[in-house]
Amino acid sequence: MAPHFNGFKPQGLQHKPSAEVLINFEEYEALKLCDYELLTQAEAADLMLVSRPTFTRIYESVRRKIAKAFIEGASIVFEGGNVDVVHWYRCAECEIVFTLADDSAQCCPLCKSIEIKLNN
Image (cartoon, rainbow, N blue to C red):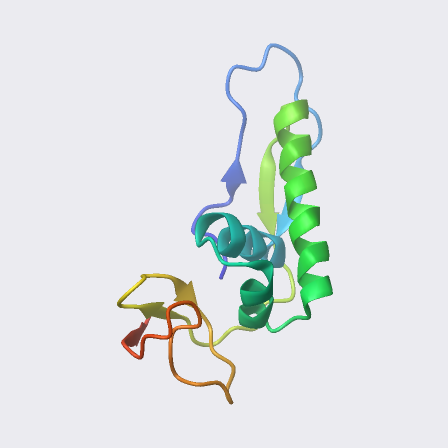
């Protein structure tokens, strides 16, 4: 899911900021799932429909980019990526937001609740 804002800019710089750090939507989603939704990398990989090693590469990439932006005082800008998600759901029990593969069980991948709704 794409963020609802374009990025971040550092405040109070006393020198010229370095170049922008570009984060694509897959990286944003990986960070959101692991560090915000508190899913394991295996759970997040399943939700993103990628292998665990691929997820790990995406996740490590976004964390390195954020560290670079913080250390260098660079702006973070969100850019495109390989995004093709049709339906997002929200669990009524644990409130995570997730996607479901067409052939998966219609339940929350984290708590297994069947009380899920489309997240508009």
